[in-house]
Image 1 (spheres, rainbow, N blue to C red):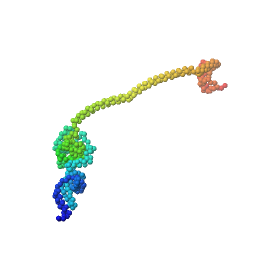
Image 2: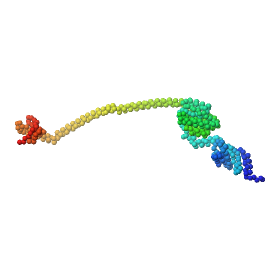
Image 3: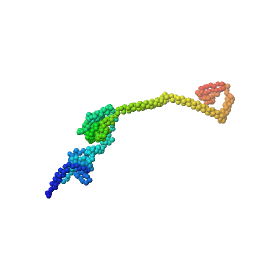
Image 4: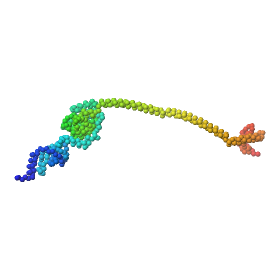
Length: 420
């Protein structure tokens, strides 16, 4: 038997294995996953409950992978067996990888949803409120589509005051994502200007999932999320639910439904305005009645507080006080008169006063007797000064005296006094 070297046996094994297992499909669980950032190659192992086989996914094939390869995934790989002669290792050189029991597009979409969810793209607090009465709306759609015609028809019927501006864009196929992203950015560039749009509506009619799949792209999701203008997604039919529906501020099941949700109904608002008018008239009438009553109350209060009214009230008060004063004065005088009469009676009947009166009467009688018995010369008179009797020797020049007798009274002035 010919003796082979290690290199020879490995070369023969390589030729045999690579020719025998040129194309294989192998199912297993991903483990020991390593992705080289520089080269872009991915190295991992597939395992089941009993065995393990190494795998490699080179950069060219990795770029066409529609989902992110992760540790623990159950996958089916398509490729061929390759042998690395220097080490005698063999592995599966993977051309394609599909997730088990689920399509790669579906898995990729679920992974993208989870990624955006963690970023907060679906959170309600990050959604902008719907404008109540839009004046200008940007519609990103194909200008020749039935969807655009339906939207214009419904808008003109519901709210003709609103201006719809069609931003013509590719709505499927190659170039759709870039066209829609650029249109969203253009419409949003008018934010905070006099020509700003109140809303951006991305709309297209129904179609196959392949036709609509562009609206599951992360770039469109980013454009909708970072737009400063309120956005709506109205793609396909009610049963179609895409990533743009989750990221936009509001979802509509169809383009026509977008107009019904976004624009108010003019007929309904006219009816509401009529109702408001009736309520306003009733409220104004009630308010007018209340204000009139209040004004009358203020007028009455002003009349009470006016100078004329105060003067009249003060005059009445003064008249009352005058009458009261007169009554009190008369009452007081009557009281004092009564009191004085009582005092007079008490005084006249007082023993002390009676004694003094008797004494005074006695002195008066004595004086009369003395005057009667007073012997004056035939032509004599009594001399008094300041109504008091005075001796002649007490007088001096210039004194004024009075001379009295029974028949007359005279006044005189002393010119000189000579002492005897």
